[in-house]
Image (cartoon, rainbow, N blue to C red; front, side, top):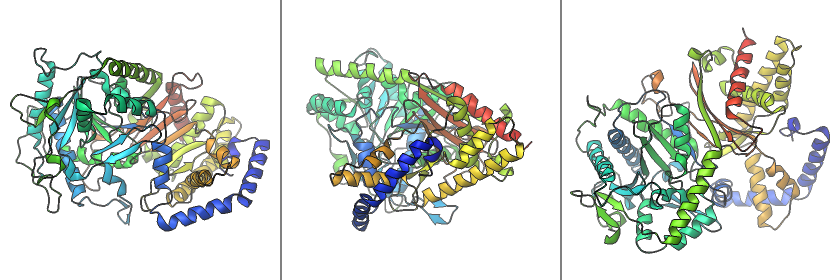
Length: 616
């Protein structure tokens, strides 16, 4: 009730309060008893329902609406050779996988003391979301069931082995050579392995993963349910990861962010746990599916890979992969060899081997009927429409551009996250002329299989601060007092959410319970249908615990972002990269006349400037 008070009129709040009290008295005891009963047999009373009903039962496209992206270094590309960068990054991802499989990855902790749940890491690799007519499923293979990745280049899919049969990782320089073979053969018009025509259905196959889930499930059953198409699709879905050797050479954070989030609608295999993207100029990023895990997991693995790349002298003077010995797996690692599924060969017709490569580099074939081609090209038009409707900008609020980072905020003895949330509230008021429910994700990994809870950032204290900032007659002292009160309240909400005392996941589970019992509870429907017009997330940096001795400024990651949760709102991701810089990723729909990402960014910058002026 406290969280909706700032956004409702007095009459609306009284009606809402009466409905809440009636629910508490009548339906709530029975529903709560059901959750208590579930807690006795379930590892976590929220997480399985959250994955199933929020993600897998969703029928909307996951492209832009659910999937997200992460960028690499902010102003540093260690080599301009695309295949060399790809070879190095894939090699280090396999080393990370090796540590996971051997259960030797150092557990994550809070401030080096309190351990947090690592269960989400189990599905980073060889995991794919399989579309269904009514609900999707997450297919996760055993670590020993796959030794290959799927590589997409210029519209053609390839199967490339990245592990030897004995479990050893293929060295980076050998991966570099295999990827170069793909690039060369794809560009050779006289080769039977040349890339498909860019306008052909085969070159646009990934678009199918970006359409309505039921429609994709129907196409998958009809056109990819048997024969060569099924065999090739199986190779993609059983791959450890998908690597995209992208022909673009993005020059700005905004361009890289847009390409990494949607790839123009036809180059990201949205169903895969994550896609590694290496651009033609050596820039790199990741694109991740959301149902199996949350962003900090992908961010940790990505940071580990980037740190390993930087620390290992990966490239020679020419920018090519340095030649090194084969890396042997640590003791206890499961081996893909010795008669398991990874050794099983698929039927011969869909194997077009690159000359001299044996089974290590294989082009996957698809034989598409007229109806299948029409379905793919229809999907391509749809995903292009989604991409065209997205407005996404990425920028940095930093000292050298007249801004500031968390260093200044900490000097004012204020929580940096709370400060930014207050700046976002002020910017939203100036942009929209009102306050709205605001979502900020909080990790609840202190609990087994914990995922997230919602921090409701728009509070009564926030409202008072925003109104005072808009009042030209209000004193600086009153504004500072209101800011500190709002920030303190936000810190308290963050703490309560991270220890399982938020309201949203509980309300969600009560609602699922009501459906299971055949109860029609209007209060729960109303509570869960209130729109999050401002959806925000902060991604932690430096999760690798000691791998970086000191991070040069150009190597701070801008982190990543996502599309707007509401068609009439903004999606805002931010990364407090250092004491002097904070990165923002701001998205909205172009079709909404009330939003504009560039305008909102200006309001965010001005809010930061006005808040700093209070202390000068």
